Each structure stands twice: as C-alpha cells, then as structure tokens.
Image (cartoon, rainbow, N blue to C red; front, side):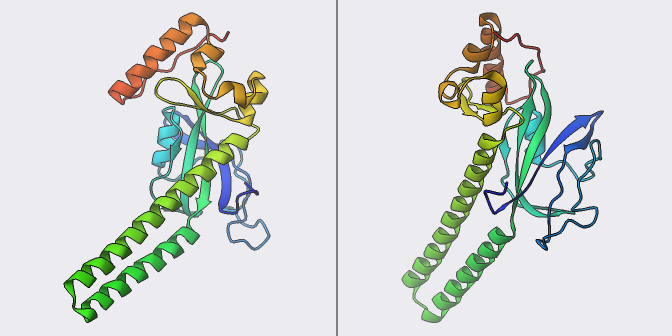
Length: 239
C-alpha cells in the first residue's frame, strides 16, 4: 500500500449468515494528518459488522471473480475507487474477499477540470458561431474526456493488480475462462512453492489438482462462463 500513493487501505471481509464483517481492517490515516484518531481511522476488531451496503466489487469477489471497480463510490470513510478479489481455500472454496480502496478525490478533481474544459469549449463554439468549428471543438473535448477516463480506469486497475501481485498473504490467483492462470501472487508462491514464472500461463487444474478434479474443474468453468451464473462451491483434491 505504501508503494502506491493513491492506495489508501486494504482489508478483508467475510460473509456469515448473510452479514458481512471485517476480518483484517488495519488503521488508516483518512485525513492525512499523520495520526490515527477516532473510530473511523482506528482498526476494526475481527468480526466488526460491515454496516455499509455491499459493493458490487465485494459481491463479485464472493462469487469467485476478482472485480475492479467501475464507478466511484462514497461511504462513511470517504470517496473511493475500489476493487476486491476472492480469498480461496486450498479446497477451492471462496472463504472471504480482500479489497483495496483507491483515493478517488484526485480522480474527481481531474474530472471536474475536464468538465470545466468541455463547458468552455461549448461556450467558445457558440461565440464563434461556426457549425464546423463548433462540432470540432465539442468532439475534441468529448474525446479528451473519454480518453482520460479510460486512462484513469486502466491505471487504477493496474495498480490494483500490482497490489494483489505483491501481497505476501493471502494466496491469490486469477484465471481466464479456460482456467489459465493470469495472476499468481507472492502469497501463492509461498503457499504452493511454485514461482510465478512457472505458474502463470498454465492451467490451474494441471498445476494443482488431480487429473479427475482437473477435468471436473474445467467443466465447472465452462458452465460458469456459459450461464454467467454462480456455481456451487466444491472440495478439490490437490496433487
């Protein structure tokens, strides 16, 4: 977290009996005054209820998919662009989710600057009263806004992916629809003793599961991607 200035905090959540609660929630200096003060900045003890409405990122992670945020949200702690990834046990069950919050205030400031730029371009177009120049100015302003928004989302996602990759605990993997490993973080290297270079690009079933379970896991992935619906959790036998 300290290596990426926009990253504000990382925490883990679990769902029991339909209610989300904190597992690991370290203290965080929300107002950047160099001190930890008050209940919002202090550490949440294990089991503290998460009293906010669950984010789509958290819901996606609890269904087994790393989910980057697509929209900026505001809660009692601040304004964030968030992302979550599932924490999966050795047996293949989603046990909890790890989430990272990116401070969205710099992104919003940049967006307000873009909005102001678009308004200025619109006013200038009216004053110039030229249809061709009007269309050109408005098109350039919209193109700049869209390009910057895409760049911001891409940068935030890459920072989130980098944070997941460097976390020493827990072990996190990300797969494509065929079961190929796209992300194998440091925690996975420590847990399984397999370097990232050897794991990424291989089928997770061939790497970790018995041949019978590897075939069953591939079928389960195909069902997940075909139906776009969650699949029941199962116990998998490791090699």
